[in-house]
Length: 590
Image (cartoon, rainbow, N blue to C red; front, top):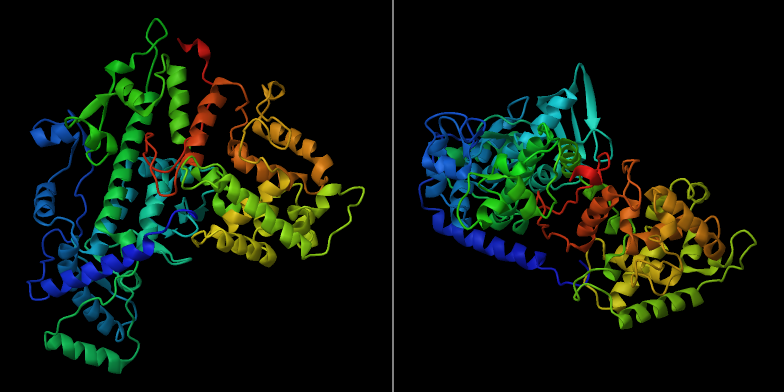
């Protein structure tokens, strides 16, 4: 976020210092044994409360019970709390195992796998990755797709998952209609911590208790040996029982115990949501055509927000109570219940406009520390005016209108002809190209510096997007009901789809900015005041003014008002927003 001082740099230095201190203290300690349950994985799938006899009191309180072998894991987890000190001890053992594997790799054809203790930094994150791939939501989706989960390739940076379906390889993306984006949110967040590099691919699953050597190398930022001389020297050190340690812990704050705990909570919240969706989908009307969700219970995951914020531990809770806690109205018949289940299953996060695509959150954030004030907006307009004065004005043509001399109009002229010709059909792609023009990025950078904003990977784009919006409409962001003199929420919009309303707004702008640029202008202004109109792949049955639209728009506003990295209090308690991908809920359900 541009206007809030980043603590990432401080966090990395702090965790590096603490980690180094812990490593030094633990250097003389006995290395942890890898003989007992080296993978740290669950040895069985979770079982719902009451499905089997002989469940312990602790299992009943948690709502989940794991099969044989879990007791030892829980006991060791209690003996080994997730601290920098305990990680340092285990990481020293991984360092020695890696040194051994790297030395022998020089004499082998294929890279070996490295034993990784579950108490180590990589081991703990690997355990969460295992949990994510074994989550009920992912497994159910994979089964529906016919995806073989024994040989997957995941690219965390692009969000693409490749696997075998039938006898063919198939790649799933966040923009397809398979539902992959609806089940991958937390999984990808965990995978990005393990593999943060651009276009780095994780081949999954990994051997139990081990991680491929190259993944260990990248995670701990360690070089790979290439020569026989290097390998021989390292083997000699191993024979002499020399100590090994990873010198620098990269991405320290992102991999900290606190960060890991956040992902554990997110997985727990997703499990709760999946249980809720399953319960809603299974509802059947009684003879009176109604359902009673106060009599239907669902398990509560022990890592979830709901479990940890309850006054006393709960193994299960009624669907009615859970919906009430999440702020949803309780459906009264099976049709309404199934529609709500579809609503909860649809993830809007990957479909919503983002700061790196021309969205200007600095104009609409609810936090006073994050929103541009009137003085800052005036300063931006002054900087844009100076920028225009230094460039050659363009006389408007009869087709282009007065918009040719606007900031957007001047930048559009710098786009390739092919991109300009595609504005009408692909305004999102054209805007993405426009905000990345060298002149555009330089202007965004200048605004950020002149206003004293903090530099982030997207700060130049955020400031540029704010400038584009304010240049088109000086009142941008002040009212949702007045976008350059047009009200997208007016009575005339009732019964129309978001795409149709967007087309009407675009036509309204043609007289001001020109026919060619109107789709771009509409996208810029909508992103500021009505971003719910810009989500892609929306169900065609969502129309403005309907009960379904109400649910959708309320959920869509959550993602807009979140500070990046914050958490919503919805069913998944992650920064996602769930849209109403469902047939309209009939108001006659009561």
